[in-house]
Length: 242
Image 1 (tube, helix red, strand yellow):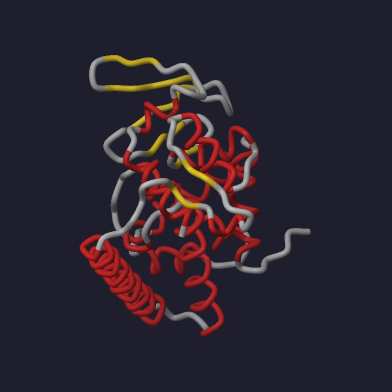
Image 2: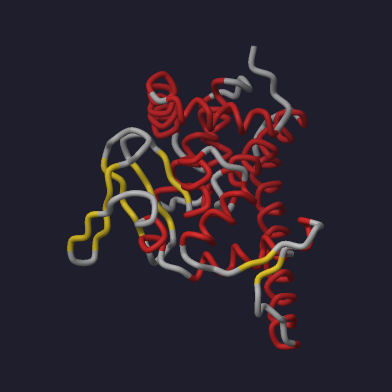
């Protein structure tokens, strides 16, 4: 519960305000950019979405992801580190699981809103699962391959903190699009899906799938963070890389 409270408080703060405590930023009118600390390329910061993205090293996420990667911290430690930087007061009891934020007493209205949000999230997840089942059932694949495609797409969505519906859509938003390309690459490179099967799953044409897979394959050879992303996603589905 305490982590959720801290996360909500951090999400309310502009991403650029948080990142100023970690790296120098460059502001030009409505644009905020910075030198990526992971590859020294140019990184874009979007306060509206609360996300950062670096095209050269294909690294992206929210403030918590950034601090975890920058300082090699666990999720809970990153929350505390950010809360200290932006002066979010919190205290700890002897039981760390009881950590709370001062003054965060939820009213009945807030509880009701929280329950409605959870119900909506559950409904969206159920829709995503139903849509994904419809896609894999429409393709001429074995039950094992259908299940594997389902697992990989969900694991990729969770890792990049995006929605399955966005990964399957034609959205060109940076993070969903990158997640889509990585999922295609994993299906082809590690699970022996054909380009035709992948095209059917994502409702894309053959040449588009080939292009995306080659793009990630090239990045996988060049950038350590892409290799880490792929390995982490594979570990989530129990795939052992030898």
